[in-house]
Amino acid sequence: MKFFVDTAEIQDIRDLHDLGMVDGVTTNPSLIAKSGRDILEVIKEICDLVDGPVSAEVVATDAAAMITEGRKLLEIAPNIAVKVPLTWDGLKACKVLTDDGHMVNVTLCFSANQAILAAKAGATFISPFIGRLDDINLDGLDLIEDIRTIYDNYCYETQILAASIRSVNHISDCGKIGADVITAPAAVIKAMANHVLTDKGLAGFLKDAEKAGIKIV
Image (cartoon, rainbow, N blue to C red; front, side, top):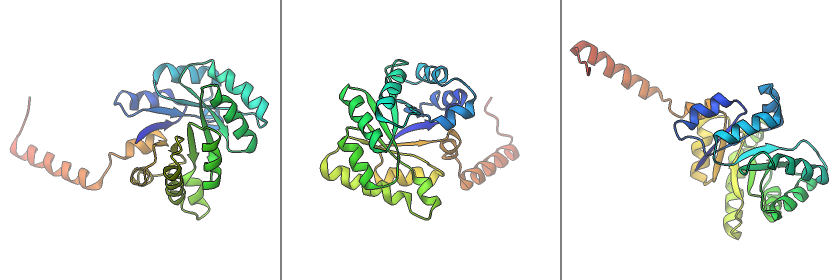
């Protein structure tokens, strides 16, 4: 399973990248606004750091304008994946851009039917939002499982990019279901290393080492 970092903060990306934990990056207008930087400038810096796909989202809502914005974003770097919303116009833009040989991430997916349409339109990635479904008392992981089953049944090449990840359990559950990619904030990815028994065991080892006067150097 590939790890994408869902952020526009360069230092967060760099910290994980140095450990080999970054296969790509996803951004959106909200994350760019939070960074307080120019969208083209920050996307360029991310692309210079990361070899894998970097999702950069359009802000237009009609197909023609999405295509124009997408082509502008594609000028930044060859590893740009243009991010479009899962609307009918977004699907039109997806089809044009993928037919031209570019990566497209179709985002804001909340149903298996939407995921089928994205695959038919040639999407490179489909981004189902787990956490936002959980917020309205639906199980976002059920959607990941439904899409995985359908895509496997018909050999769709679109990769399932599980988004709106809220917890470390979301990540491991997506791995068990078979999501191709997860995208999560850096803090959630780093939290995967945490376990109360690891902390307890380490505290015990250190206490015993101090008592015995053990020193390595």
